[in-house]
Image (cartoon, rainbow, N blue to C red):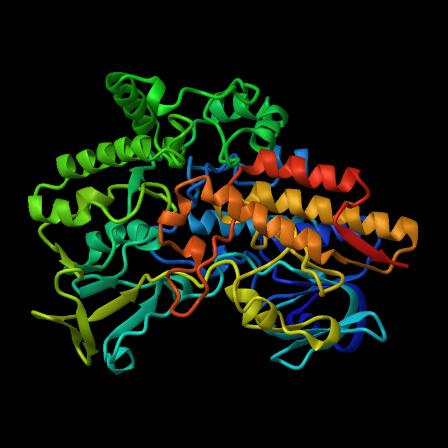
Length: 550
């Protein structure tokens, strides 16, 4: 199908299902819907598939889940034939994978690219959703599925004078596709979250001078990234099915394992209190040496016991002080305002070592805050920093941002923005009371951003497909959560979160990075295995908590 055909507008067109987003969630959902024989259309704002991996092209961008786990499991042929090159894949490699999936399963013909969905409204008379795009599409469908991603709406900081800057201005999550050459430039980076922690070591190698403007330091652990050994990969793939089962049903969040021989989900390991200080230190050293976010799994209560968590944090702060030569810079990089892991723990390659370079400096905004951006730099309370290029690495309006920027209206014209004015409410992160036949893949109230997203995406899509098949078989037209079931699930999500240290993190998990956004802990913190059991039980009990209309 050529470009002109692909870009034809859908005017007053009917489908069985409309999907918003052509990232991994939208691609897999489209593939599964075809298996049901349903007619589906996907609308995607970008020029290509890939979702977050299409937009986020900043230097050093790579996944923080291991490649062999951060991949589709639905096709044994696909997982055997695709060859990952590194333990943690880079953005270009992950985008190539998404493109390969789209081409291998012939998905592009049902996708309309460069389409920004502006509205999705439910008509009670026709029992149809009408979806409109900024470009002029207007289509109807029985079912509307939001595959919009949890980290897809960039958060632009509200800094006076930002529009006055005359140099090069880039946002990490909207990076130029042609790339950027920083050679010899004076570069400033605002932010030290995950994107910045990946980008800063790469930019530092090119830039003449790099100045990092940090308000809140984050904990980061080494990735210990490496090229994958083909022989090791072959042996791992020989047990791929067992590994996949571990990722889906294990005690953690589905991030993968390093062993060639898979093991069943392990019984509960020791808590911090059960270990001597020396034993805990040894466990932390071992996990630090292995690398990756699995570091927080060294003992079972790292995110629920304050004393254990403090020992983890002290360990990482000790590593920072041992790595960064300037004691003042090291202290500025040591987080002290949140328990470790309650903001998404970062995974890095040489981040702390970068501050030992002669061309890199750190500005502690807690001591000298930014007053304004000027035409040629940044003015803090005590100095002016002249810059040729400014990079904004200030995160996302996470989990709800993509949904709330559309005009989504359910029964009685109720706007989703109105229903969620005090924070997101849904049942299982899958459906929303008052919004029939609207599904949200990895929505708020599901493990989503706490987990390996590919594991969670596949689980949600598979569950939704089973529900749609049930409706088709039983001659049912509509499904939506019961309000009481939704309320009970929201309470349960909060109860689980309050049993952990997550609410003390002040992170984007609670919307704390967006001014005026309600402070509600959005993801489900009990783990992908426990969540899957809940969803399976709901389905086995006749989709308990959902109501259907014939």
